[in-house]
Amino acid sequence: MKLVIASDIHGSAYWTERLVAAIHTEAPTHIVLLGDLLYHGPRNDLSKDYAPKRVIPLLRELANDYQVVAVRGNCDAEVDQMVLSFPLMSDFAELVDSGGRSLFFTHGHVFGAGYHNSVDCLPQLRAGTAVVFGHTHHKVNEAMVRYPELWAFNPGSVSIPKDGTHSFGVYQDGQFSHRILGETEVEEYAGM
Image 1 (cartoon, rainbow, N blue to C red):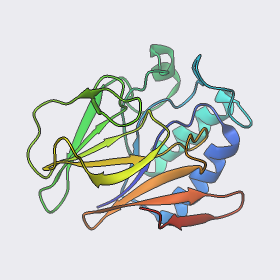
Image 2: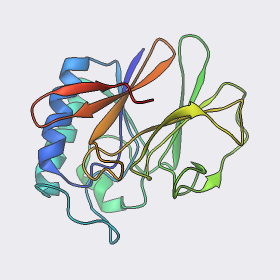
Image 3: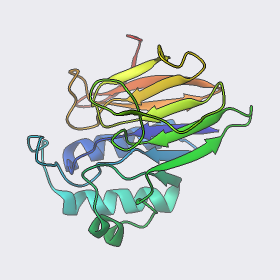
Image 4: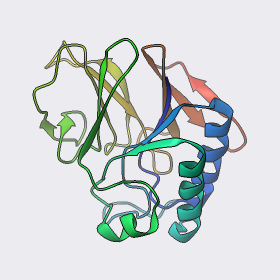
């Protein structure tokens, strides 16, 4: 199983096009979208090339080519579900990898790992579970301090990063890594 994990697209056609190209290069078995896909929300500036109507067909095409797992972000609404071709309205989703590791996906505003401005509220999770969240627009890849038996991973933000680099994540062979979206190519992030 190879996952591409992306969050906080916020309606940017420019960065979604780069993400789609990177996804085709990565050739994952699943795409995980951690919410805030189409709209910018009242606290964010408009993303580069803000065009939700252009993002919709790009995301729908991905769902034709890959299995998509998606969760609802704080900027996602029921109308978004009406225009997207994959379920989006759940506050969390879970997958178990081939090694038996649980992956708990959430946006970070209802359930969260307590990093940056995400809530510190998790359901009871098995030791070894990875909590995979968005919302903060900051990359994370580490054992949780408060819950050392859990792992925290945040792919950062595709379009409105608060830590300086547009990014997404990859999960393969039990390991998480970040990829930086550049203007023309994707780089692996070795900073964590």
